[in-house]
Image (cartoon, rainbow, N blue to C red; front, side, top):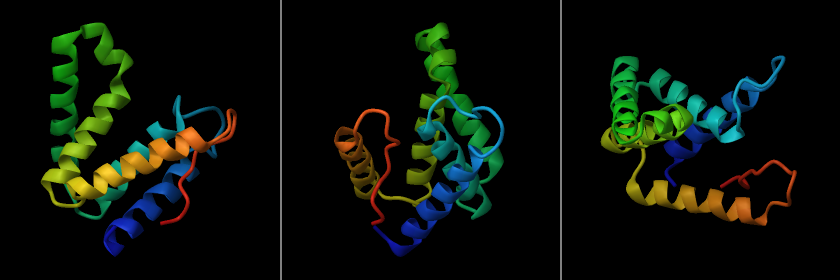
Length: 124
């Protein structure tokens, strides 16, 4: 992983962790907070504009609703994640290999984590 990507993900993780500190759940799942945080940090760092973000998210939501309107609502954050991945890849902020490695690291961490314990990655 590049040093820039490592710093980027560290900032996004810290931001995501801070999102859950208010009263009540802000997100249904921790990964949703992380996806939100990565989008905000990426935009703040100039990886893409918020206008590009809303266009990309809108496109993903439209694709989902074209397939199944009820599924689009239920999979809002799946669309969020798809839009984020597409933008980060197209802007060169993350590479295919890096994305693939990160995805598999999370899957491995999920399998190794006991039930009821939050899933987390060891620092790279």
